[in-house]
Each structure stands twice: as C-alpha cells, then as structure tokens.
Image (cartoon, rainbow, N blue to C red; front, side, top):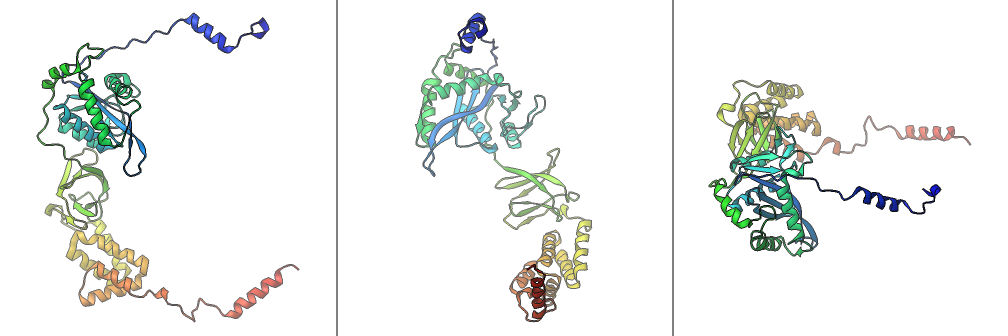
Amino acid sequence: MSDHGFAGGYQAVKRFVRKLRGPRLPEAAGIILTPMGEEAQVDYGSGPMVRETQSGKYRRTRLFVLTLGYSRKSVRLLAWRSSARIWAELHEKAFRRLGGCARVVVLDNLKEGVLVPDIYEPTLNPLFRDVLAHYGVVALPCRIQDPDRKGKVESGIGHTQKTPLKGMRFESLEEAQLYLDRWEQRWADTRIHGTTKRQVAAMFTEEKPHLLPLPLEPFRYYQYGERVVHLDGCVEVQAAYYSLPPGWIGRPVKVQWDELHVRILHPSTSQLLREHLRQKRGGYRIQQEDHPKKMPLSTAQLLRRAEHAGAQIGKFCQLLYQQQRERGIRRILGMLSLMKKYGTAAVEDACATALDIGVHEYRFVRRYLERRPHPQMFLRQIDPLIRELTVYRDFINLKIKEQPE
C-alpha cells in the first residue's frame, strides 16, 4: 500500500471494507412450540458470590434452572457444587416446587446426567435415570454442541444473571435462595414474556393441570458402584459382605446401596440378582440357596495351598472352612498373608498352639504372632553370616595398597 502512496494503516482498510460489506444480518432461529406439560429444559449457570461459612471467603455458586417449554415458568435453585446426586436432587426439588412433572426433560451432555453422549442411544447416569423413572419423566439429551435445542432455559439463565443477580453478593446460601425466590414470585412470574406476549404466571396456571402428578413418596437415594465377586461368593459394601448365586466368583457386578438395602445387579442387563438388608461392619448376609452344593474349585485350591505350607496350617484352615463355610475363606486368605509377614515356621507353631487349646479363630493366630517376639528381633553375637574382624581388616588393607600414590 505504501508503494502506491497510501498513508493509512491496516485498521483503516479494515474499517473501510466493513462499510462496503454492510451490517451483518442476524441468523434466523425457529421457535420451538411445545404442548402444555410436555417439555422442560434444564441447565447449569454461574450463580452469585456467597460467603462460605468455613473459610469466610466469597465463593461462586452454581445456578440450576428448570424452565417449562409452554409457559416459560422457571424454577431457580442454588448449590455450592455439583455431583450426580446433587443434579438428581435439584430435579426432584424443581418437580416438587412446580407441583408436577413435564413428560420430557431436555438437557445438556454433562457427566452428572449423561455418561456417554449419543443422539440416538445415550447412556444416562444410573441415579439420574432412576430418579426420572420414579417421576415418569423421560430424558432427552441434546446433540453435542447444540445449545439452540434448549434455548428457553439458556434465556432463563441469562435473564437471571443479568437482572436479579448482577453484582450481588450474599452472606449465606439460604439468604441468596430467599432473595432469588422472592424475585421469581414478584417479578419473573408477573412479567410479560417477549415471545408469547403473555404473563408467565397466567400461562403456568393453564399448564399446571397438564403436568404429571407427583408420586406419593420421594425417591430413595442410593450409592452405586462396581464390585468383583470374591472367592467366598460375596461382594463387599462398606465392610459388610453380601452373597450372590453360585457361578459369579471372579466376575464384576453392579451394586446399589442405601441405608436399608443392598441390591446386586447384572453387569450388562442391570437385572436384579440379589437384594439384601444392610448389615453392620464385618457382618455377612448369605441366602440359603447361595451356598454351593459342592466345594468350588477356587476354594479347594486355596485349602491345598494351606496344606502344602504346613500340616498344622492345613489342618487349621480345614477346620476354619468346615465351621464357617464361605465366611472362613477370607480368614484362610489372612492365614496365607501371615506367612509372608512372620514366616511359615512361626505360623505353623501358632496354628499348633491354637489346635491344642481348641481355639479355631484367625484372630487368635494373628494376635499370638503379634505378641510373640519375632526371631529376627534378637541380636546374636555369633552367626554364620557374621565374619571375623580380621577378614574386614585384611580387606581394608588390600584396598589401601591398591590405591595409587
């Protein structure tokens, strides 16, 4: 440009070209019309700054918004953090506040709700899926990076952030929630919506009778995880043990538990295999039909290992299994671990003592070994491993002579 006598800069050319192009026209976006009670849209947004009790510092909260597709009625809830359970609980609170449920919930592909995104067959978080099933609601995840499908809740989040919460700080989460609820009732519900040109509260009055009724009882929340079935045919949940049908040793299963029950599910079909009452730490829950008719191969191999280690160890482990059956398998494994720590000879002697006094308990053997002085604790003056002092003297003299002067 300077070769042709132009004294302007790059930005001047950029502004000139922008004027030639003209203003950029906004892209057309269709309005999704939904029947009454058919759809709700949910999403997270950034909430206000709230003082945390423990640290005394202000911390950013999370804003959960559920918006009905027909009336644009919204429920706005604040939380400190997010998890699968918190995400599910916020949905349940929103349903309770509305007094009913929409038939479909449109959501993003966040991990709290969707484990594997797929427009045709997404894998939902099991806890979130069960909560929605309890209320008769179906989840409809959006396409990845397609926020326009839930534009109503996106607009609701932006409206909340720019109107009542802009520049606001609160001293507690309860205070912030009360302020948001008061704004929702006085201003958000009474406003004339820009798209429908009608009052939100009036439209919600029309829509509420078309919502699904709430169940009589709230959802019973549970924890879940995966376990591998132990050699005793049980899975461990918080230091208690629960049985499965024979044939599951060494295989992974899904487990759900709450304060009352433990449910063991098939790993691929989620079919209920067993349901048990919760037990205390260290307790067992084995149904009568779960006892194997003959000794499993893995148990026979375990007893054979104990027998090869020592005659007294093998006899003691045989008695453990005869008296305690599946419950004794973990004790037998404990006996084998004691041999690694204290040596086979010490465990053989401890088992012989236990058999002589008639105490067939793993705990007795372990405490006997813990209180018995370990052979390696004694320092001996004479030992084949200790060489004469003259050997060390001659070795040192030899190394001194080998050093160059």
